[in-house]
Image (cartoon, rainbow, N blue to C red; front, side):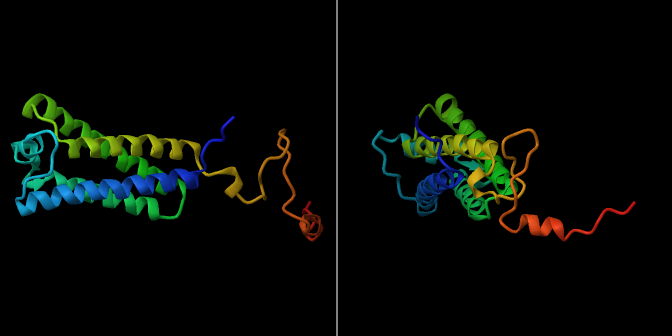
Length: 177
């Protein structure tokens, strides 16, 4: 049986995907501001999407919004591995996934053209969402927790804190009546 990846392995995979997403979003942001046509194997589809009315939201290029989103995800992944940072990553990827789904819908049903760069970003964001939810729900690895306080053997039994635990217990002051 294959062991599930550790929280660290999930985080490293997510870092790689986030850097890839940063690359895609950076390229599309560059294309927008430079005015150069995007490299596209699907004819003019990418150019059609990049120059459509849906390529901006309130005057801000969606490529720039995506770039900022990937930067936020990267920042959340670089924070110390705690429940709050794992939740932040999951929340950011959920928003990114929703935004990507909206834009993909616009490509399919409004623009009638598919940008392969946009699709690659949507795929990256989908995988990031799945991994971030998995990482959040599983919590921290048991191996990374300190031995003190972990349940051992069930029935509420606790492992000793280490070789000095009996000595520490004997130094406790007696209970007051």
